[in-house]
Image (cartoon, rainbow, N blue to C red):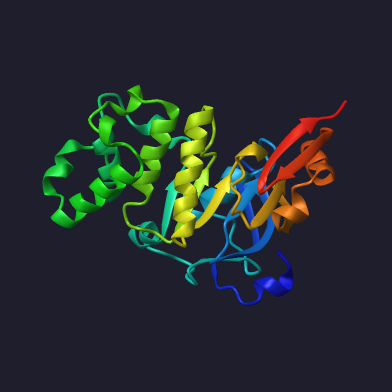
Length: 269
């Protein structure tokens, strides 16, 4: 995306001179970037490059080092109430699947989007409006036949769809997904892509991480490449998803092929 094309966009996240440390190790370094409405953003980079930490800045589970030269704003605010944040951004992180304890059913996982806890007792105090919203999400994400099943007994694809439905409880304008296509078989991958495509058609903005370029959504219009904790490139898919840049990023010789918005890569000898 060119600088000229970004001028008319409205930012919902603004980062200036952002640095993040864990155990005295710098994970993100000198992050300067705006995330804007109207963008569907892919975050791409090698393992350990800082992609998930970048996403966790957005859900406020990670905080940058504060200095007089740095600033971080969400929706033009330096601090934001967690419930206000959830009404604006839905989140899916890989570790969420592991947090669900045994014997919790799928329905209780979805309604935990309201309460923040996996407790069946909350279903008794749902309003009629909330029940209608939940049932609509269950239908939209193809979960009605398994809604009473134990969450941990489900396939990876079913778990992923359930947690995304949970993330959409408050009808956010933005959805942030960490490795949504990880460990999915061909059918589950296809179903998830279809559902995410429908959300984009409804003007929801997507920010997602993937390692597999075959999982890049055709309607992605911005790519941010992160390497060793720094943003190395920021532009459109057609500017950055190519053989040279990805070979340099992942330190492997590959050929990148694009056809009608879908991508794949072939290793080179």
